[in-house]
Length: 246
Image 1: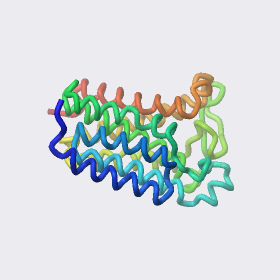
Image 2: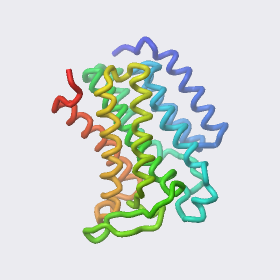
Image 3: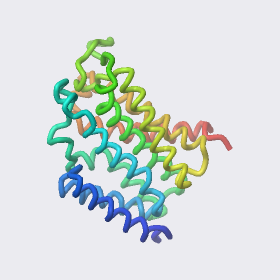
């Protein structure tokens, strides 16, 4: 049980990030503190490199929430509380990345496996947020699963996704994975593609789940937990099948 050599720099970056979240009012004080804990776990297990994909998600989600807010409010698709994230948001979308960082710190599993879980779950989280926030701005009709078939839905309804939403989700998942590969948290391009693909596919599955009775019972935060777990499972399955190459 040893700190990653880059953990100190990572902790400093995590503190700076938490301060930025508070200053820009992207999160509540409790939410910023919870995010700081996640970042510290990530830094302890993976080093400072882990902060880049995390920052891409957190800061990117905050930016997308604010862009075009007036139009999204008119469509009924804007986040409540002006998009400020609290502890439930952090717990739902960042518990799996935090767990991966903690397990890496404890050397409970191979670092490469845990890094893939960490990045894939962040890719899924950002893909989901991007689809929700950018989809209404990119236009086009939204569709979702209702009564066993696809139905047209208003933007902002759980499970509704448009062509623009799919595009935004794919780009967001790719951005997280590309960032992780750029700092060598993921050491190969095929592995980065697996993380991006798993995150994107998990966001699609979450949207389909939202239109079912099970999805309704799970609620928003429950579906976000499902999203993170599905991203990790899909990524690990793809790697186990040898899709990452040699």
